[in-house]
Amino acid sequence: MLEQLGIATMDDVSLNGKVVLTRVDINSPVDEATKLVTDDSRIREHAHTIRELSRKGGKVVILAHQGRKGDPDFISLEQHAKLLSSTLSSGVGFVPDIIGDRAKGAIKGLRPGDVLMLDNVRLLSEETRDKTPEEHSKGELVGNLAPLADCFVNDAFAAAHRSHASVVGFTAVLPSVAGRIMERELTALSKVSGKPERPSVYVIAGAKPKESFDVAEHVLSNGIADDVLTGGLVANVFLRAKGVSLGDVNEKLLEDKGYTPFFIKARTMVKNFTERIVTPVDVAVDANGTRAEIAIDDLPSGSYIKDIGRRTIQLYSRLIMQAKSIVVNGPLGVYEEDNFSLGTKEVLLALSKTKGFSVVGGGHSLAAVHKFGLDKKLPYVSTAGGALISYLSGEALPGIEALKSAARKFIKT
Image 1 (cartoon, helix red, strand yellow):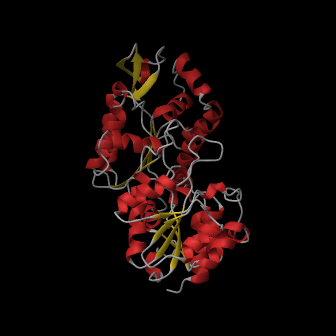
Image 2: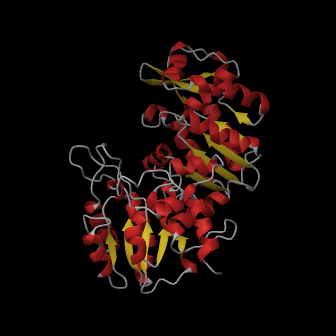
Image 3: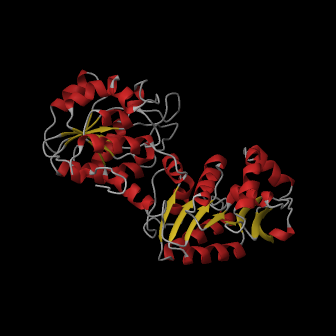
């Protein structure tokens, strides 16, 4: 039981011989031309939960999505089942059906330990409609599958910010618990949000304006972070808010990327949290394809700012090494280009050496972690994107709230 959240886990229910509907998030990158999955990382992660359910005698029925209708990566889950089967080294059944007779027949035919994957739940039009658990429980998905099941395991933290049918619907009618990935994510995030160990440092960078400022505002306003270290376009906005002239090309880039509406919020935050919002003291610009570092006092520049400079790297690394709780969301520069990957790489290396507890999340952050080979050297790397941002912004996640309600309703501990 996750006592601090009031959420039950797989340890709180009997699994042997039970039909266990299991929601995972194995939404994976897909090659547009071949329609083949190009990265099975999420499948391998969720395999830990599925393997445990199977070994404990559960009749495991997997629910998952892939892509969105109309997008190139909206495909069947047949190859996901094959990839999972390879990871588990045991057979994983698949039916190209979700709520029809083929799916129901396959579920009824399961034996303890069997694993079955149903097809892409987003083939059902009701799946992506935002409704309450009670409303979704009256829909086709829950109405057809819940009578065949004994419990529901939600292992899809990465989809927990969606009030979709397969995420929240079953919690209204079945004993529902967190899977191991969900449990792991919530346990890790509880250490860096709410009342983290001090000093608490958040590194907020990258190129997503609204999400970045929502997180920064939440952790500063609620006293969660002692310092917010900024990088990427987020840092440029805060520099601009401090009255720094960046240069025409950089000002235009902020406008093109949709950052202009956040200037007012940034100025307010700088005014309210002057000492706690840490901006670069130097930056690296693209001088005809080469890296050139200049002090903030020497701006504006006619070249694009693409990374933090070495003095900033030293400053940020020192603050990270002194911290006991650290969150990193977003790369500090254009890490895809070798000349401008230094800031992101060095900050992640500092993170790998600190004695504090850290969480790294966000799609581009994960890609940077993989690029620099630091996957196994960091305390915790989150697989979530939007859900992680929502959680760090202090939002209530529908998938989490639904598990809390289900624990109160169904689970006796």
